[in-house]
Structure formats: structure tokens, C-alpha cells
Image (tube, helix red, strand yellow):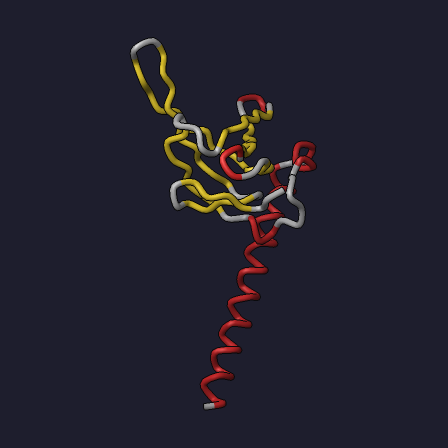
Length: 132
């Protein structure tokens, strides 16, 4: 039960909003398809890692896809919004029953924690400078 994963030097975690670009082969044609959503969980270890992404489709229907992390069909993963700092669990299955407004609490919690850590870092730096 991992909170973060790395794909081609891009680190993402549970609670992040990501864009997954996947290569799809239809006959002789190859096209790219983008799936954007919230990372619900990461499972497995080493080369067997996979992650679940959920988005809200047409008519407010939830769509979930499981992507193998080291699959050759996954071209790139792009983090659009960080939420890992606001997550207190490894799997976010409870967000399936939540409204979008309630899910945004995760991102606001992450922003608060990030801002709090930045202010404590600044205080530590000023203390080190004054003690010299």
C-alpha cells in the first residue's frame, strides 16, 4: 500500500488529479487517448504496480480505470493538481459516494498543510541565520 508512484521521472500519489495519456491501437491506426481523474489508489510492488483513476463522465456517472504503471501503452502521466498532502488513507474508495465539492476538501487540506510547512521552513531558516 503505497502512497506515491513514479513513472518516467513523474511522481504522483493518491489524491492527485492526473492526466494519463494512453496509446490505443485500432487495426493499423495508433491514436492517443487522455483519461483525466483522481487517483484512488496504488497497489502492487515493483514492476506489478498499478493505479486506479476515477473521473465523472456524462450524466454524472463515475468511470474508473485501472492502469498498469509500467505498461508500454501508458505514454505519459501528468499531474494537474496535487492532493497527496491532504490524504490520510492509502485508498480513497470513500470518495465514490461524495460530491465534487466534498472531494475538494482534500485539495484544500493539502494546500493548508503545504502552506504550514513552508512557514515552518522559513522560521527554521531565519533561526539558523540568527544563531551564526
